[in-house]
Length: 175
Image 1 (tube, one colour):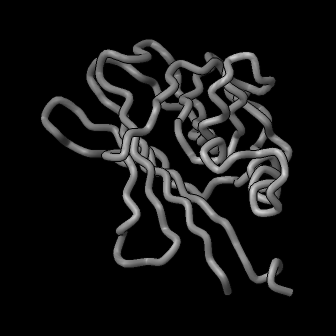
Image 2: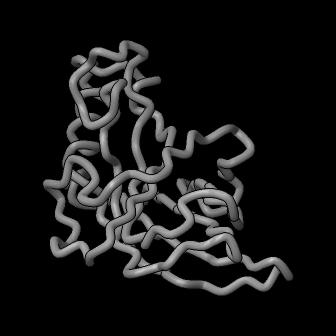
């Protein structure tokens, strides 16, 4: 009964910021939390193979593709469908756990600045765990990172006139 009343949800907002500081929301959607992260969380609480530091959400990967991504996000996703044009490693300044006093709510923030990924069509983004410190671990990245959540952003042309801000909220709730 307890497990059916516990939820994990996420929401991704992508905002363009131009040279004058004008902010335009380009994508604002719930995201899909994927099975790999849920499995890793279960391994952590049962003290199986994963270490707590490996499960920490540590980076946002931005995907680009000249053509539309045809596959909707699925719980079975393990990695990007498009080309990864940026791997943004979070620092403590990028993570906010005090959003409106809401228990279990965390926001991760990343920026694709005006000099990055120009000429690309941004299609999706994904949150990834830290993984281990051993570069030879199997996994989507070079450190055994696990995909936590992924969202298709549509078609966002990126050029030097805008920076893209990613705000990804993840919430654990007990109903």
